[in-house]
Image 1 (cartoon, rainbow, N blue to C red):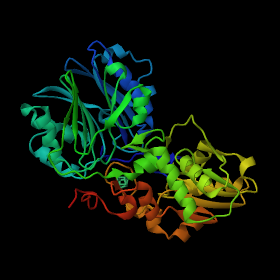
Image 2: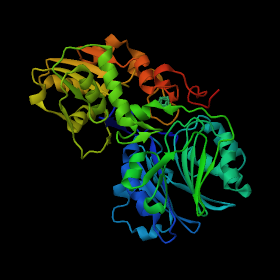
Image 3: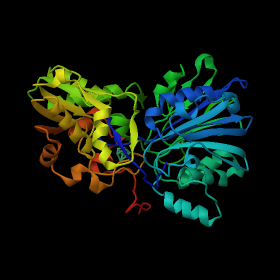
Image 4: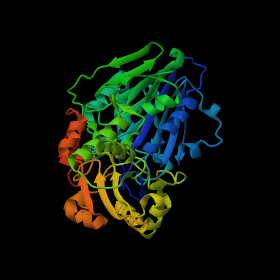
Length: 476
Ligand code: SF4
């Protein structure tokens, strides 16, 4: 979902100021008397790490949509809510990432509209690279927009060809939109899942217990929350439809090439998820092992920047023989990111979010592993706290290569000139962080962990899978 206005600063302790995208889920219950929105609500809890700005559910009761959405976490938006208002055996849900977007309730998802086929609701994860020209085209044709999101353009494009059926409408949209998109849609008696031709972001299919229905979700951790059985991942470019006749796949009619965002594996996805057949935890652990093989460091203990650095730190410890220990404890009650009205509050915020275990740090030579280094500002503060706690040496390791390029596909990376690896050499970054040494996972090591060429690694190597916007506009 493309964002337009940046309103606040925030601090993340999971990665170095890299922010989440969105999470989507859809549930189809075979029993028409069953309320699917309950299940979607549980699924949104499991996907909350993918976005904390807003949450919403659209319920489909015999083709009529009822929506509840608002700013806040799923638990806040639905606290005390009477779910009988969201009746229907089909429901879709969305969590949106924090810190960006126009920040209004209206832009929260799912989005809904009425078209020739009836009422339709849609939830979208990803960013389009031709959003501006699509919006201009649609506006010229007389479309009226209620939000600033590119998701609304997708909804418009689907509805444009609604008279020829929903499949034709979706195919029409897919032939015109460029970029990253995972969609869950409900219309009539159907739940529909769609993945872009590159499969940039994940979408999986699960089966509810006792063959009682279907789930489409951004990550497998949501299936687990619903006690649903994993069936398979949606293929790049595929449209999957669940209705009274079961599950139907509309194979892509156009060229597809899988390029899953490698940052899903490095940072975004939950470690207990399996994305396109690969365990996220194992991927991160292998990155840590590769780091240890790349360079031998004399140290007393390997520590992680929690949480996403933990599997890599465990892998590093295993491969190096240096014990793994905890040195940073995360305050679990602040959420993954939180809003800071003033820049000056950032330093305090990191201290509140991460506290040190002095006993494990004082007088020790530490290897501290983070999933990535984007701006370096948060990591610099962490290194400072570790020094204050008495660390004798601090060797920083990033479990991914230098981030040198911005993302245009839904991951909120800063503009290229703000990336520390663009501004400074590794030696200068090490000195900026206040560390004794700095090691990045090499691009070769990352490729070995990936095992094949089916990942987008453009943040590291600049090889975008498609043309990307120039100066913030559409792709050229
Ligand atoms: S550019 Fe980076 S963050 Fe964006 S999809 Fe590719 S790997 Fe992921």
